[in-house]
Length: 408
Image (tube, rainbow, N blue to C red):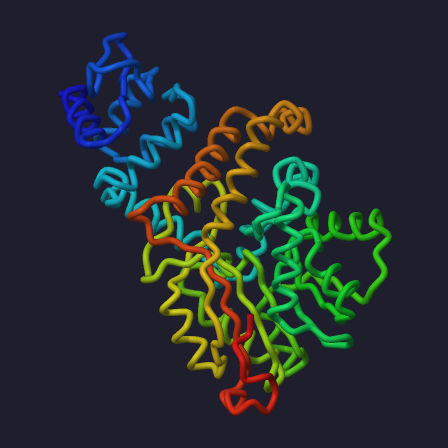
C-alpha cells in the first residue's frame, strides 16, 4: 500500500512535466514515471522507514529522510529538479498537518522575542567558521544579492556593485552617521566609510562573525570610521534620532515570526527626521509560513516577512517609502554562484572541520542553496528580493530634506 501511494505521488508530481523520475524502493524494486528515455532523477529509498515518512509526512519528512542519509537522490541537479517540481504541484506547496504542528512548536521554541534566544539563533548560522563563508560567498563575503551588470564577470564584482548601489541609494555624504544592522564581515561598512566618508556603527550580534570582520578590516588595511558593537537591533531604541542613515542587507528575515513590528519601530526611533534608510531582504507578498526544514536546519528563528505587512508597519511608524525595487534576478544569479562554490569546494570545506561539515551538513546546504535558486526562478513561487528605500517623516515629501526625485 505504501509503495502504491508513492507511485501515485510520483505520477502526480511528474504529470505534464519535463522530468522523468525513477524510484528504487528499499526492497530493490523500482518504478518509473514514464518509460521514455533515461531518468532525470532517481530517488533511492535505502530504508523502509523513509518510504513511510514520505507517505505519512509529506515533502519535509521526505527531505528529513534525505538529510539523514535514508534516501539518495541521483541525477544532475536531481535535488533541484525535485524542488522545482514541488513548487508546481500540491505535494510541495501544501503544508502537511504533521509539518504544521512541528513548525509551530519550532517557532515557539526559537522565537526571537527573547533576546538570549535571538542570539543563539543567529550564532547557529553565522557562528560557523569564517573561512567556510569565504569559500562559499567569495572574497567580499557578501551574503546577499549581487548586482549583475552587463559587464559583470565575477561574483566579487557583482557583490561590490550591489554594495556601491546601496550607498548611492542612501545618498551617503561625508560625515553622515550610518547604522548597519547585521554587517556580516564588513564589506558594506568599509565601503561606506572609506569611499563615501560615512561614520558607520555596526550592530553585529554574533561574536565569531564580529571577530572575523575585525580580522578582515586589519588584513585589508582599512582606514575609516567604523564602530562595531555586539548588540541586537532592538537596542537601537536606546539611541533616539542618533543616525542620518540606516541600512540592513539580508538580515530583516532574522527579525523572526511575529517580531516584525519591533524591527520597524527600532528603525523609526533611531533615524533622525529626514534620515534615509534601505532594507534589502526577501519577502513574501502575504503572510506565509517559512518552510520547516529551513528554520530547523539553516536559520533558526528565521522568518520571511510579508512585504505588505512591512509597508503598513513602516507607514504606521512614519517611514515614508520612496522606492521598492525587485532584485530577484540578481539574487538568483548570486545563489547559483554560491551553490557552485559549495559543490566544487566541498573537499576544502570538509577539511576545515570534518565532524561539523559532514554529509548531513552538505545535504542540508544543497537543499538550502538549491531551493533558494529554484525559488527565485519558479513561476508559481511568490518570494522575491526587494530593496525598500525610505525617508523618516512624511514632511520629506515636500522636499525639505531630500531631493524630490525618486531615491534610487
